[in-house]
Image 1 (cartoon, rainbow, N blue to C red):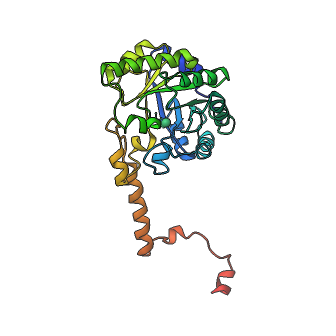
Image 2: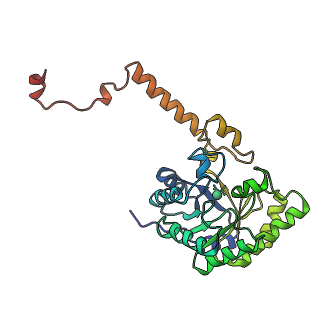
Image 3: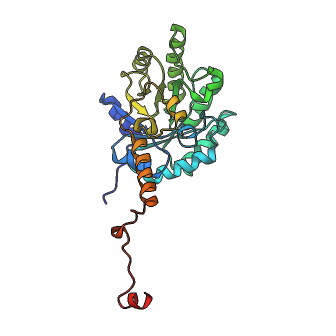
Length: 292
Ligand code: KIV
Ligand code: NA
């Protein structure tokens, strides 16, 4: 097998400069990482959305650093080409820059990620800018995240689009610029989640680093979707209710899976599985007669 070349931050910057769109999809374990890699997607995000789509929580807040580290390691084993970005989970970086550096270091060294992203590394608060700058100073490539930031869900008062008024829109552009100036420009970039397309376009135009959008229209430098949402993976009624409006389903994998599982159950119950074709092991010649 020829060695696979990693899609590095340098390649990402070059793709951005050429005006080509950047692709990003989440993954949480070995098989999803293999799929994202085989599909030729540029960036694989091990997001704290794992809390919701893998662990079944209602928000992203409950997932721990230890749980995330387990997801990082599994994804790093499965994806060799995509750039790997790991989310800093809620409560693992907010106290002070030292805590942020300690956590980011573990995500890279123990988790095998190339860069980190945090939901609330937003430019608005000086503490967040300091944290982003400290990470970049420590040699960590940082992806910012502006717009809807689910880790701030209790402050925002629920999952709702951000930046719909003029003042909120101006604030998003300002936060993105502050993050860029904090050093996130060195190869890192921004996820614009759930903001009007016009605000995402203005932010993209104002920055000299790429923006990756989700629910933010087509003017961003690239697009990201959550693996399970994109694939139509989860059929649980609760999850159907929270699958966002902006998410296009490219498949109905959940239906395929439950269909296959139900077929297995039926065939075992009615005795048609395993048939002779799936019962390949026989006694050694000579022993068959003695055993019978
Ligand atoms: O956790 C996640 O999956 C994310 C994406 C929605 C950008 O942060
Ligand atoms: Na996330």
